[in-house]
Image (cartoon, rainbow, N blue to C red):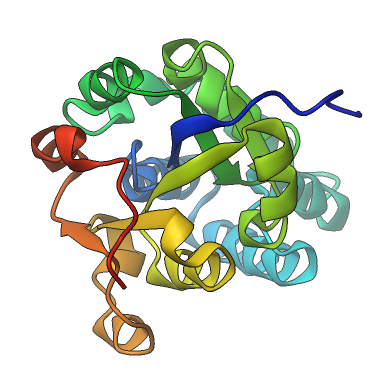
Length: 231
């Protein structure tokens, strides 16, 4: 949908990732893993994750419900998998938010607009954002793409700003965004989740402008944002 005329630019816009940045998605996956083990058994659990990774390679993003549908297509006589979809839809995502994640959003919004900028499918990812309370916390300012680092022109059009602050748990994403926006963006790397602790992956990319150990630490930096990074 055409977003209409470009609004006047803000001085700063904060862009926040979701999975393993505001919400502990590793814990959600572990919850699902344990439920699959109890509901369908070890072999079926392994089969689900094989299909999940296969689908992620094809689509470029995680599709939990899509993997369930593919499992169902390959095992049409297994009714237990239907309960797994209900488990995902009933998951209390708000309980998986990192400590003080909502406080961080509130503090940032007192300074400048805050936008959720994340990757994912068109059904489960927005559902997760809404059910976790994040959608309401940013008053519906939510963008979900397949590869957000490839559509920064669309982000700029919808939320024009003289400067951006991008908060993410993946150095690969932050590096890609930095390569496009340069000094117009301050990149903030949150060392949470399995991507942020994979040393081999970390060694592939330069450090972000700011590195914090947990999203709550962003509260100590709120007042320092808005100025172009020096590199």
